[in-house]
Image (cartoon, rainbow, N blue to C red; front, top):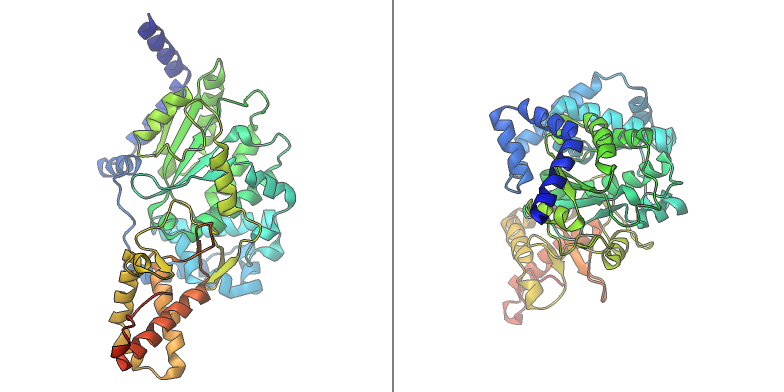
Length: 447
């Protein structure tokens, strides 16, 4: 009896979502066998990280610049007159290249769209300048704290950043302008500053929360369409999109019409990586787990209750009022104040003790600088700092984070100048160790 009821319910749900399911299947059928295999690998956490070489980066940046020079875009011209270094910065352009898998035409088109959207929502006077968290007003900060978007603690099975999105938490009085400004801070300031997110893409989880639904009015077509249009301009590659819908009378039929409309507005690479999951909270989360998404840090429990401690950690990790701004490669990136998801093997830790000294990232840090020690020592003194800046940039571009302890709160990302200082300190210590071998001080000690 129970099994028969479950089967009938699943058949009913399948019929309600049939139009969207068929649309997604048709999108997959448009792909070549090789493209389909790549999509499935990404969905099931076995996809490979974007592979780059210095030659590939340089050639792509040259092609990018050539295409830009042949563009006639009013907002881009304004940006050049405002701050040429901002829009010509290699790290800035590289974000768009990575987001589009080095398709230079798509990358240039997206950058132009990004600048136009930025001018629309922040003003033309801001188009070639950084937008900081301090530029958000009180309502926008409160929207950020609501948890309607959250970066989930940890990573999926393939080491990718997971972003949780709850439409039911969007306040009814929220305007599209507020939504877009918050999205800019989250996706551009925070996510594009994470090297892993640039190279591996992110996992987007659209979750229809089962509780609190009666008090929330779902956003309309125009609202969602406009926010998606802005989202498409952001240099973020979505490796997988999970659409998790709550089964309640009539809800799936509504979502069927809404989702098909929105999916059509997404790039094909995102549409083909979208998967639908419907049922109870327990059922939907069980399906997500099969795609390599951990549930121990999921923002909602299996009973549909919001996990307040997870939301509080999100706010503390990314929305502390005292968060600083770090300068790297000519662009300011919002520093991730408290480290979410723990320390990675590639992290370079500042501190004392054997655990810090023999951490994998610290060992590799010393090995990397040792490889350049002869080159460094042969430089005139007035050129050594410039060389240290170059070494630091190379480490950062390879995904290494420089972290220091923040009292009892955990680890925080150091600013770029602190990281350069540690490189200089390494070489000073190495020189002193060679001079005073009897002192017992170990070369490369990070402290």
